[in-house]
Structure formats: C-alpha cells, structure tokens
Image: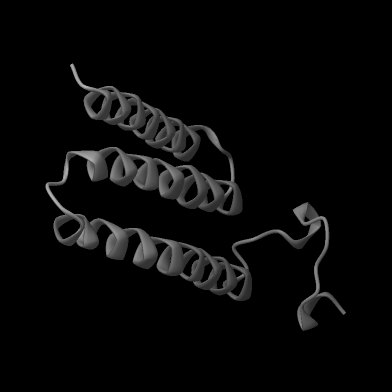
Length: 109
C-alpha cells in the first residue's frame, strides 16, 4: 500500500462519514431549516473529502481537473440552493418566525 492509497482511504472514509452524518441529520432534525443545514454543510464537506481522496489516484493534473470543477460548483450551488429553499419556505409560511434567533425580514415588523 502506497502513501497515496493510504491518503485516499482515509479521505474516502472521512467523506463517507460526513455524508452519513448529514443523512442522519436529515432524518432526525425536526424542522425545515435544521434539515437544510444537515443537507448542505456535512454533505458538501463529505463530497469535498471524497473528491480530495480521489485526486491522489488521478494519473495527472489534467485528469484531476474535473474533480476541482465539481468541488467549485458544489461550493457555489449548495449554499445558493439552501438559501433559495429557505427563503421560499419562509415566504410560504412554513417556517415559524418564533423559532428564529434573529429575523431581519420585512415580515417581522
């Protein structure tokens, strides 16, 4: 087993662990905003760890470039999607404003 194989094994296991914790949070958390948190943060970190684990196995920099692109797009789209879903749910009245620590929307006044 080479050093690259060891790094890959550790990163893949860590990424799978983060994804599993995020999935467990999706099942266990009580409300939409908590579930969105579980769907974005640990899943994003898990995917980044998996991609980092795949990078040492790539033959060249050119073959690992798509991994970098996937990571960048994940970092851009996950927070935007979560923010959009949370905003739509708030406007639809699904989110209870009393559960929020700070509410800076026009609806609170």
